[in-house]
Image (cartoon, rainbow, N blue to C red; front, side):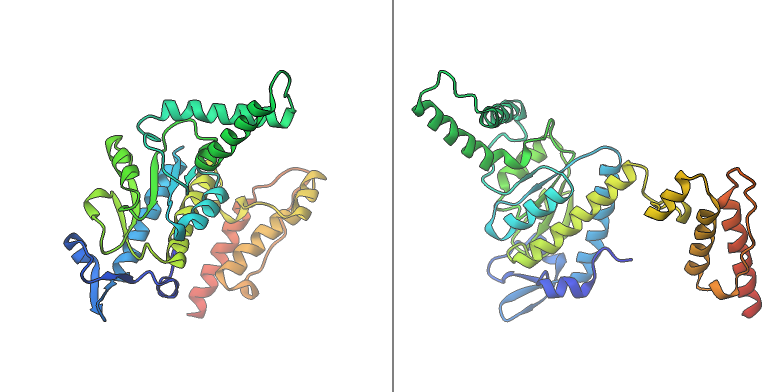
Length: 308
């Protein structure tokens, strides 16, 4: 199944570039044509580069990496916060603080200060402090939460950064390049592709465009997290069990689980009506469900060969 479809990209306006007088000649290879003074981005290339970035992010996260979502422009702020929060990754959607990557030790101290202020507020410990001190501390907490709230749980620099609008986030791009952190970014027709390791040609000014591309990145992170936890690429018999299946397992009855696994394979092959499912004699112990599944699959293949 495709990560994202051409129709979804078209509906989101990903193909719209900048005016022809505002462009970077290095983006010429990503431009399909020009219409009414506006460049049209080649979405076929966009799909190809999305697949490359998707696989890279998925593999990075699967091996323990983290992805920082960066997008401080108004059109991207909501999508950045929503998608990063969905996959529990750090994000910056307000002002980028200089040194957030290259001087992370100092930033980490500010994060500890933020957590101390929050803990103090929760506990209600105001002993020995004047009203003015409490007011200043409250203002400090609000300021830190606004600028660092998205990275409060970050303990080290990220493995990858996802950036919406590399021109606006040029400081973040510079810091990532200095630390050799791979950059995945959406590139409009006025951006420099040489600054990015995994470019995704597209519109970085539209809300829907930023949202759909950021969602794709978050989906890659989610799939990587599943692979990291050992659930990625699970077979039919290894998929999470339904509530009734867990109850049967708790009672020590395995037969319904075996039958469910066999039926799932038969349904997936599209020939459930032609498959004869033989009972698996459990005899009070756990039989090899996978062998039963293999037998049914072999019967299905034989039936299809005869019918063809």
